[in-house]
Amino acid sequence: MNIHEYQTKELFRHYDIPVPEGRVVHADAAAAAVAEEMNGERWVIKAQIHAGGRGKGGGVKIAESVEQAQELADELIGMRLVTPQTGPEGRLVQRVLVEQAQEIRQEYYLGLVIDRNSQRITLIASASGGMEIEEVARRDPNAVVREAVDPAVGLLDFQCRKVASRIGLTGKLMPQAVKIMKRLYRCFRDKDALLAEVNPLAVVADDRLMALDAKMSFDSNALFRHPDITDLRDFDEEDAKEVEASGHGLNYIALDGDVGCIVNGAGLAMATMDVITLCGGRPANFLDVGGGASPEKIANAFRIVLEDPNVKVILLNIFAGINRCDWVAEGIVQAIRDQHIEVPVVVRLAGTNVEEGRRILEGSGLDYIKAERLDDAAQKAVAAIGEVSA
Image 1 (cartoon, rainbow, N blue to C red):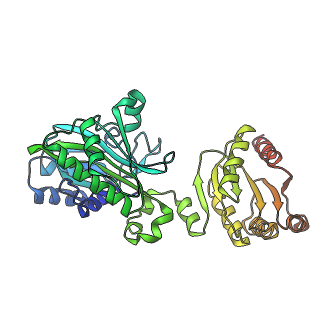
Image 2 (cartoon, rainbow, N blue to C red):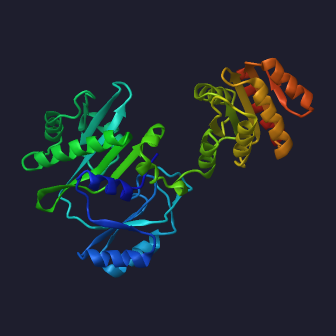
Image 3 (spheres, rainbow, N blue to C red):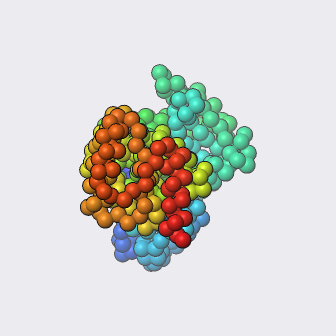
């Protein structure tokens, strides 16, 4: 789960990580009021969406007066901001963060991620702050410093000093860097985060280090331990179908193809999408119904998949273990009858109670395409699209 920059910075404040003074607003008049309250001569107006590259897309503006702060907030709120991470459709800006502008002398990158190879939290830093770390690593891998953390002892001072020294944070900046790194690690660990990113970590006036931009992402499977983080979820930033699917216990991710997929098990779902692609098709979604797929769950899966207007055929691939094919078959019959499904439906059933499931489908009198194997199902789904388009 992602949260907004202003929410991340509020979390940082609880861990004494220095961030600029600022406040989020939803209207241009409020932006002017906040700027006036903070005094100063310049303010940064930052669009708040769940995507990076906001500066490149025009989502970060500098105001030289209170009046200009109001004008820029009015310009940003309500616009669809397009960045390299949003896709061409962009994201609707519903709020902006108004902050005091800082005198930046130097920018650095600082982040924490889970390294899947070492299975450890890893500190990442670079002297090339303000840039996307992926681009820095691609252009010059040696410019990125990595330090794995032993979970038994946590992030140690000498590791922080080593990282800080390698990116050029020396002298009076060194002890500040050590404190920020350790506090960021504690926040990351306490909140079951998957990503914590400060870009840039800047040297500002009086040689102070400050997190000018902040991003965090959390492990959704651990949110039951963190109701304070769960409360920060912004459903407006998520695909409506994905939000609805999660409410029904379905794992759904929208894609840009035309073959709707309903599968049990994440691995089988990935394999199904691969085979569809190998057969010349394009998956419209990832959808894992999980274990215990009741008829209602299958019917909900059909409805959510069909909310995508690009779907021209549905491929249902069930290999029942915990699930039962007769439950799934009942759900298929219920969905086709109740939802008046007009696109072709390809069904491949295997596993527990498969014969009973097939008997239910065959006895329903409904029109569907039967498949025996995964490759057979994918080929028939792709062929069905060709027939629909002809």
